[in-house]
Image 1 (cartoon, one colour):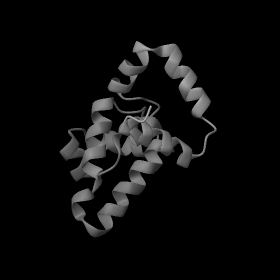
Image 2 (tube, one colour):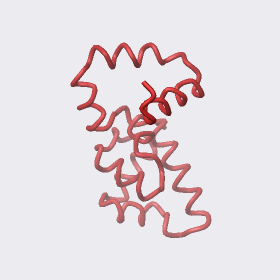
Image 3 (cartoon, one colour):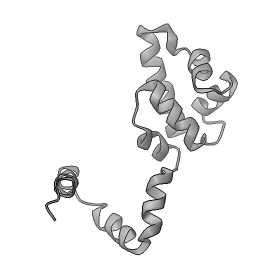
Image 4 (cartoon, rainbow, N blue to C red):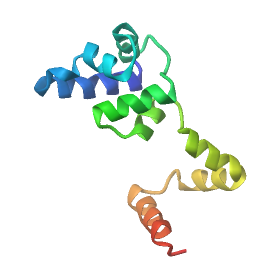
Length: 117
């Protein structure tokens, strides 16, 4: 199984325990794919779905779309566009942040949001 497939199945099954609307068939119907396709994705026998399908899954499962995209080996179109505008700068930034603890990254995010730069 793939990381994405494992994650999707776990999240969907957890919700299904308390809500039958999260059966594989019903989720597939709501997001506009065949149940067999969603089953293959969950089992890891199908490649990663498109960004649009992952976004619909994230919305249906109340999950973060960026997490599903990352698990599927993708980044969102808007992030790719941002990176393409200043590729060297963002590549350097991301590489420099890779070993920094989460709390430190969150502090940087808050400072940028608050305009403290």
